[in-house]
Length: 336
Image (cartoon, rainbow, N blue to C red; front, side, top):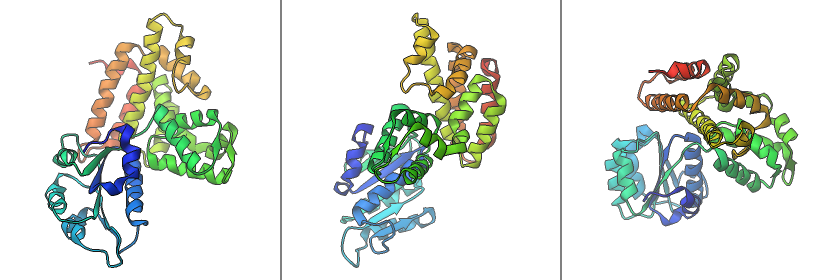
């Protein structure tokens, strides 16, 4: 059964009511985090050898065997399957036919929307099918707030906005930075904007936001440095595409409001979340360089880049560098 975003948290909290969960999408960090959450709920641990069977791609042939096995110490078992693709469907179908209370947790990063595995499990009434995509804007701010609240750390609103503007979209990277800040603040502590900036330090310069904002503003030197640092930190080219599209959408909104008669300053102030003050100059330069037609062409190119990066054997790092170079050149580089 396909689970919408509003019901995801409740479904994950009640995963014991399901035979299994399929976690697909482009954010591997979020997929892994949600899979671990499900496993802990059922088995109380991620590495209990009696209650948790972790199957990598080479071990997919054991799915039916593990689903039918009993725990030697009692309690429900979890079969945690990673790197699932369509080839796994016959084994999952056979496993679900077994009379067992074992829960299947299936990670399927990059699974296509028309994939047979996804279609079949979305139609299964006892399988929760959940998309895991990079968070941005209000969704990212809400997730950051939840992470800090769970750690009993208070954060100023300005600090949250700044974090949402500089952190990458990958969930694992976001959680890593939050854990660093939580350790800095201590339980019951409070973080100001200055605290967050001091703690994050130069890592903010390695974010996708720096690369995309500088590229759209035509600042090739800053964009290239930011991209290379992000690549060194394990940047996902898919996340780069999403960051580009997010920024282009915000620029288009401002242009639309300006067409309605608002001044540039008034239009920028309408954006939620607001433009971080240190990014204001770059954002304004981008508005001066791009018009609606140019943004539409660039969006189409970014969508094509994302599709290409999902193909097996694609030189995605080279394509990432080429995309940033094109954005630095401006609208003319996307003329047909």
